[in-house]
Amino acid sequence: MTRLWEKGLPLDERVLRYTAGEDHLLDQRLVSYDIRGSTAHAEMLAAQGLLGKDDCRLICDGLRQLETEYAAGNWQIELQDEDVHTALESRLGDLIGATAGKLHLGRSRNDQVLTALRLYLRDACDEIALHVKGLCSSLQQLARRQGEIPLPGTTHMQHAMPSSVGLWSDGFHEAFADAVDGLLAARRRINKNPLGSAAGYGTPGLDLDRELTTQKLEFTETQNPVTAVQLSRGKAESGLMFEISLVMLDLSRLASDLLLFYTQEFSYVRLADEVTTGSSIMPQKRNPDVLELVRGGSSTAIACLNECLMLASKLPSGYQRDLQRMKPPVFRAIDLVNDSLDIMAYVVDTLKFEPQNIVLDESLGAAEEAYRLVSVERIPFREAYRRIAAKYVK
Image (cartoon, rainbow, N blue to C red; front, side, top):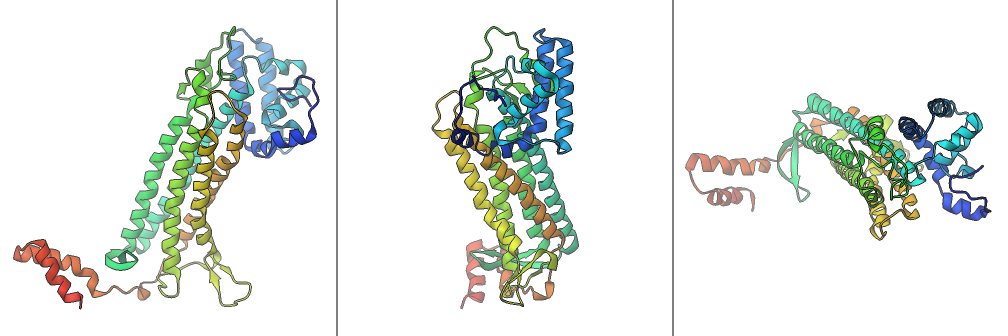
């Protein structure tokens, strides 16, 4: 095993474990993206006459074979690999021989990992947006099923004005629909090609065609100047984490409402048996654990955002190894929001409001009465307000 940076000097096993960290586990999701970036890089080298066409074909065929074998479970990234990049180049060498060593020309592990990450994050934005749209569809279906059922609208946790299941559901639908626009904004910042920036200062002496890899990898633009690439580390990730935090914030508020509606004191909703759990000591209990965990997930998402921001906030320009620690919170937040959106859509699909338990007090129409008084008697609103208040406030 020869890692990309090795120079023949010994490495203490404790140092390997500490510096590799979780990368050999986390990078499992980056295999196909690193292969895609490596293929585009090889094809660009060949187009520039820096790699023979036969060598390019051998490398690209080898990478595709490794991707197939990985998908079949024939190999995994091990601790000794350190990361996905060494794992692939090492196995490519075993497969096609010394030609594999030509692939790294004009590339650093810095722009290599960032390319794979951005390709992954770009897809992650699209996947989260799909999950958001799925929840939006569930909320719309709920509004169609039971939208006419009246609900008390509350302010300050007190009954305030008339509302309905449809109005309540549509409010959350708009909040989540807005999140799709936020994810698209995050995607625009991610969708810049860092490949060819190498360690942050380009590849002096090599004539690389960065625009070609931008085209092949379907980035919207080539990130320039090369020194801007490492300065951008943490910003695109934090932008996505921010949008995820907002989604989780809305999920938390949706969960909080449903938890309140599900209490015995309210009994506005019935949760399907299959989405509730039981108590280990109280035989009668059916617990809405899933909603409580969704509510708690907003704290996790915000913590992931803060971790990303804090990691990047004190760094000088150029690459710093601190950035490796950004993968865990980013991946954790992405998995959390997708799982939470999916489970909440299922809860909403199986949710049933119980209109017989929902009582609207006559006082909820007080504001409407005041408006009607203004319209009929043409008096100032403040006078109407005081007259209606006297009716209800004793």
